[in-house]
Length: 170
Image (tube, rainbow, N blue to C red; front, side, top):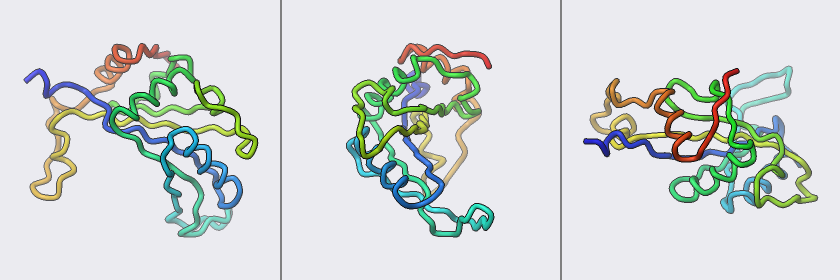
């Protein structure tokens, strides 16, 4: 039963929000494809906000999702970009971690691209355990049991053990 409690990385999602379509969005797409080697998906708005000039169906950002070994390898580089220090507030109640990188140049192995300029991005790490599929399946969908849910403390211990992350109180 000990391996059912094993925490693993389900996915790593990189996101850049530009707020408007056009050259900024094209630069963001190019940046994410350079960092990950995958083709990013453009995200669209669903609401209308007239004061910001936003209408439904407008492309205002992009994201790319990595899983498995690719996610773990890139995550090590992303943690190195923030000096292996993350605020404790960045972990949510389900044990997932989200943090931002101000400049992509801080990522080891990322080279400056003149056409992109300087841009930042957000990273979101989703954790899971064996058995979490019951909340996502179509038939007989159930909730994950209270003793099986990943807590903040368990998530913090996972990142400290596996990646050597230091969490700061803020």
